[in-house]
Length: 258
Ligand code: DAK
View: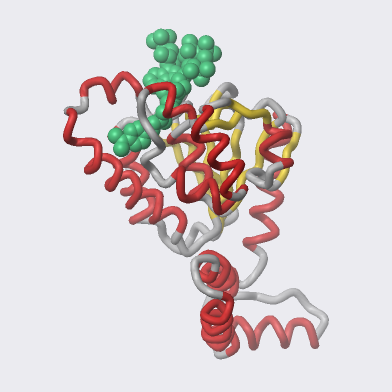
């Protein structure tokens, strides 16, 4: 599939998807949101882990496209937010892990996009914030909901009401970012993490992700039930037989994802 605003490459079952709008610091316009939706709807099993990043060195994504927003009609905000939320939900619920490799500004919709991924790896020069209030807006792509789940209610309220921008180190201290690395090591580090994922059972990886993601929204008792059910699915799989036999036979497993 050919995209105008996305670049995609895949090697050894690891995909790298870059948002590419060099003249607008990769800002999210309607085209990017639609293309992201199409991309995630058509992902096939050859990709077992995806790294999502922004092209260039300056920005992951510097927010929603402010210039496009100026032309969106007054009453179209809710529909725009719902379309974006659906696409970000598709990313969060995607059957494969999605790593956000944040290489510069992750502001507004950019941070919301990164938070829809499974975890965030940041370069030292990354900057994080939800500055919507400075534009007379509030986050509309899941930011007010996902941020408090990452860093807690008080710090989330601090971020959304001040609109201030924070360093990678602060984002790491607050639990928003899983790891901070030198800018020139970001891609390598993410590829290394992705390679640790793709050598595991794709089926078990999918179920493990689902158990954490879906379980997070449930009570602990309901989460335990979900975990037991997904454990049962893993237990009945060919990958479980292969994984256990490979351990006993002291060889590397050859997983098929079944
Ligand atoms: N949109 C459009 N263009 C952008 C942009 C953006 N968000 N960010 C940067 N650009 C463009 C700049 O206009 C400039 O283009 P030219 O003027 O050269 O044509 C080019 O990218 C380079 O940017 P700068 O020259 O400004 O670069 P600096 O290094 O000086 O500054 C910066 C970098 C990231 C600090 C600055 O560009 C900046 O403050 N950008 C805006 C950050 C921001 O406020 N982002 C929006 C957050 S609000 C909604 C749902 C969700 C949202 C909105 C509505 N609905 C439900 C309707 C989400 C809102 C947000 O994301």
